[in-house]
Length: 262
Image 1 (tube, rainbow, N blue to C red):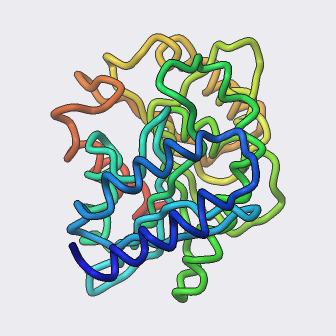
Image 2: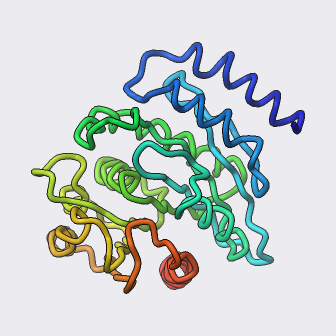
């Protein structure tokens, strides 16, 4: 075991989760995820960030391109971790070669059996984690910062962006953005009505029901916000996790960022 990673885990266990204040997130599960994945990180390195007294895991992967473009905060979906093999890992390790430093964040999570609606109280913990990620990237000298989020991560990102006056984030990519949950914070269309920055709403033709049934609602929400920088893109044949369509997803995102973020 790499000594740096070993000491990082020890610090995280002693001073992070065990001494963290009571939160809605399942911090014991966060701890288990950290123990399982840190030793398996070959691209990038673990970084322990702090929000409201709670230490949480981020995975930092610097850009390798000769022309760095900025930094991307990557947010995962329900109940998983910042190196999840579907969508999250492929993006966090591939974007650096295209000029984007990535910082994949552990977002608030619940037990596997939790219902989607139970995630609502966790949204109050999202700003602290995103602000910690933004501060970390800025400390590396990165000012061009975007958010790339999947599924529940997109709902969290949308809610955050709809309720902040901070203009730090230059663009937002939402993958598999859902809706149709009776106007709650879980609905991206509710938040999109208040977001004015460039948005790429990307989904698969075989995506899950909440995504497909809210396609028009999301587009109409962006129209209500007078957001002319909103783009909705469908990838034919892709499911919610873009299995077998990873390169197409990467190409679509980077092409949009290339023309959107200067």
